[in-house]
Length: 407
Image (cartoon, rainbow, N blue to C red):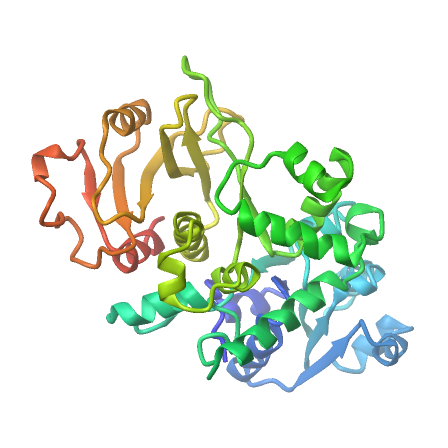
């Protein structure tokens, strides 16, 4: 069972009659989380799945139905199958003082699915992630490697064999591919093309997105590829990491980088079933980079944003974290710069030093796949004086703990 991270004061939310909206990938455990919340509030939970016609018929008259269940916690799944329910809930909560507690869920990004719906302040959006490294006993390096290899979806880490793991990954992919894409992109996308696009993205994991390369490989036009990318991003299966905005004298990369969000899904698409095969794969660096970025995204507070920084000479800082200070676009100030590396010998060359000097970040960290020492302690083959100012080696587990405390 996955314990999804929910950094919210649940009792305070429902005391103020706010509506919690859980959006996240398929089969990530949103229903389990809703049941845990109901248990915490000591309320009986009523579950409705709007993808089923039987449940849709039960709420033909929403006001009457909600009025009959004011003492229960109503959990409504797949709200994208019946978008009008949001308007009904909004109207009901504004008219009646005695009302039930609502938890809504969708398998797609809420802002993309309901882009024409003005979200009121009563709607609290919360993304539900797969199991994070912080929720595991990461004091043993073997746990980290298994989590990197198998991913965080429910049942991935506990899979007794590679065949069971593959079946569980295929079940998730089938549900994503077979989903209705019309509400998201305005067209029904071909299932085989979605799978083909995912397999190509897995090969390009960690690289800058080039629509023309994908279009030529799939034999379709650039605008059509854009629809597939938008659908997969809204399904929480891929992440587009934007380039750091702002003015600079140097020529910088501006296109986003693309990642498969869950490492287990990525390795399944690449046919990697063991750590030994992963260590010999040409995709190891991109896989580790995407894994670190995704784990950071799970613990990073909402007011922080993630970017990457890359010059025309391919000198790159894989992750730059900025804080939202209500500044205009293009004026974000970097707070933390993170170098993500996989080699046994650290790479601190002149180009990387220049990149770090370009960014006014307060803290700089280097995260290596084989580094599990205490924070601030350099590997044995690195001289402390060779590190740039405010730059420290740190294990992934310790970095996640630090970032989770940011305010």
